[in-house]
Amino acid sequence: MLSLCKTNNEVKLSLEEQVTLVQQGDQELQQTLLTNYQPFIAKVVSHVCKRYINPKKDDEFSIGLYAFYEAMIGYSINKGTSFLSFASLVIKRKTIDYLRKENRKAVWIPLDDFFDSEEMECRVERVVAKENYQNEEEQWRQREEINQFCDALSLYDITLEELVKISPKHSDARESAIQVAHILYREPSLREYVMDKKKIPMNKLVPLVPVSKKTLERNRKYILAVFIVLCGDYLYLKEYLNKAS
Image (cartoon, rainbow, N blue to C red; front, side, top):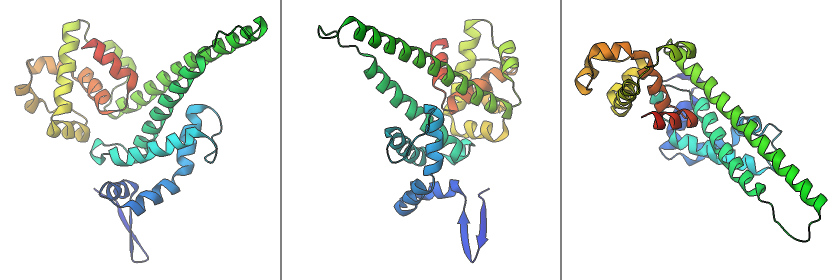
């Protein structure tokens, strides 16, 4: 149900409804949201960069601002998440991609005869330090993604510890469960049902899959977990699923 409230004879729309209007072509509202939510954008980008981001000076803020615009265009209210949660994920992902690209450029060392040994040693130390930072940053992003995944799992009454225990042991069973999750994700009516009810529509699903209802029941939570990954912005977990399937 869309949220509306009336103040001074005007109708105030929720942020999600405003984003819908932007998607319908309201450019003035688009600019207003881009302006009003600059502090939010700067905060998310600063969190990723682990330093204060100056909206007037830092290129990273421009990346975040454009990511917020992309989030407005790509957001779907049917996914069951708030717009700001979705925008935060998009901003983080775009900022991370930008930092990766810039870091790759910065790692190159020119082997030039004009550099003395001390200068070269300093450059090597800087490169090692940067590589260490990249590794730490990668680990931080993975932990951040796992934390977001755990939050999503909790909505379906699943814990990460439980998921580890009940995951199918055999590769064939895992592949089958992943395929079932893809079917749930691809079929709009099934996808909306799962997002809304937080459970699998067994009777509707059984005719569409090559496994029995008993098998579906046994792997229910694992299938839901895979479904959550498919619906969300999970870079590392999706990569894992691609390797597992």
